[in-house]
Image (cartoon, rainbow, N blue to C red; front, side, top):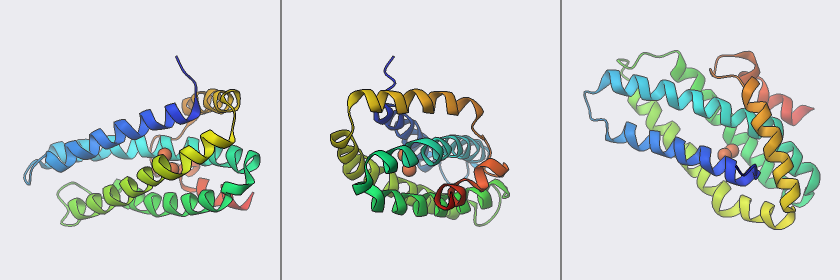
Length: 166
Ligand SMILES: [Fe+2]
Ligand SMILES: [Fe+2]
């Protein structure tokens, strides 16, 4: 199994996109299904954001200072998504604003993942060696085991701030 950091993160993106599509196709009245899908989306996003904030972004920032601006923009995009995730985690699928908030989350995360894949990953792949990417990937696999799974867990809430201020 490859531990290449970019391969791992793209696999996560693919699964997240699959759930987004399921949500979008669920239909107006599929309240229970949409609630279940959002639970799963929030879990995957919480884990994914955590391993990027705690490992991928700081490691790449350290090794490749020229992509610093991309990293800082990504932290901000994660932060916006975090806020929506926390709010959604406190809502019920029956709430009037549940679908709308989920749609905004989906739009903003899609934009962020597209940017990572089309602009950021190619720069990182070019700047780092295969071995470095495999080492970062191996660290992220370990980190996933202790990652928060709910947006309301303190380690999920504080992560973006800590990553920037530390
Ligand atoms: Fe990201
Ligand atoms: Fe990502």
